[in-house]
Image (cartoon, rainbow, N blue to C red; front, side):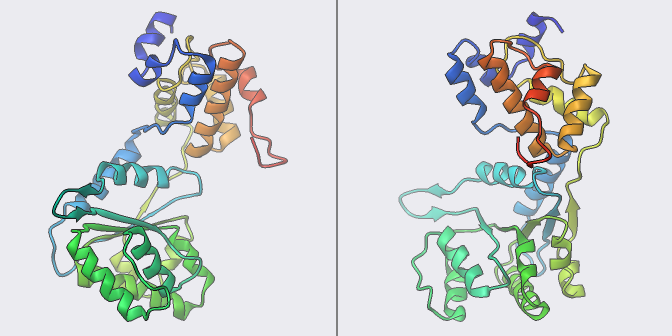
Length: 293
């Protein structure tokens, strides 16, 4: 790829900082960037369908699961930002309540997390029934259309009985509020929704797989390169040795792929190399003996 072709392919946001100082270009690397690869788009479409679902007696739900650092939270964050809280003179609209599951199947902690996220005043010592009443009231008042519970596998640290109680509480919220609930977690999350047949049936799983060494992976590398503020082409997807080295260092986890490439880009800017080379990747590579980049 020629320099001219490379520059014409850069995303406008990367192109806009290309002539800035090294410090500004490196700072740009730390800003959030959305990479709309096919599986992410598929998950977003599923979330959008749930979000727009009209209220009915049995609202559909979803379990999104995959390995750590494989893009789950990025997809959820992008989706939530698309449906931001709205304020006007008359009311507050909170389209999505997105919380982290408590460290264990603790219903008090679950209700506290929901009320805290909604910025509703509450007494942590109040009875669960009172907190539940507050949740139901404020969900209706602010027109909440979806509840997302991330890291749902956290509840596995409790007893089976407590896990069932926790999941049944989510099922009851689903029934009472008539809104979809999206659970997010690692593979162990499948165990969290298997406490009984009804719960398992309520949360059909969607798997976010580890990347394979195929054309989709090469397309991902090409998409990422468009977001890197480098003045010369790195040809990440076109150079077999580079594509293979990135894959081998990261095991195909998108979070690690992005971390490695951002570090390599920073090195390329700092050294005025202006492109990512195989040597540059190895210098910034994953130190498997320490588990750190």
